[in-house]
Length: 58
Image 1: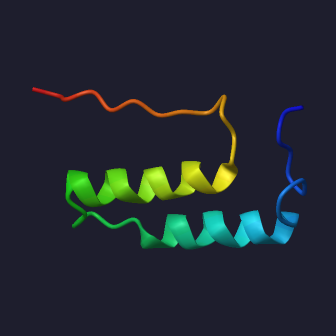
Image 2 (image 1 turned 90 degrees about the horizontal axis):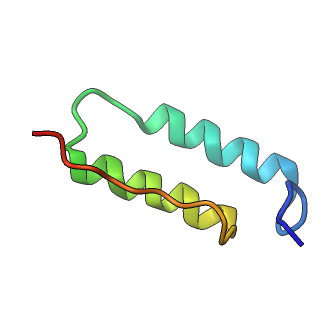
């Protein structure tokens, strides 16, 4: 069974989560701060099939 909106938490929870995430993004974030915010969002999804990979840009 794959997670769907409303399975773990109500849809409104996720809408608020993403709104808060989007409003927290600023130009002054360091790369580490941005990665921590992204990780927090993915962790809240509770989906083992969704992941993230960061690649260093040189």
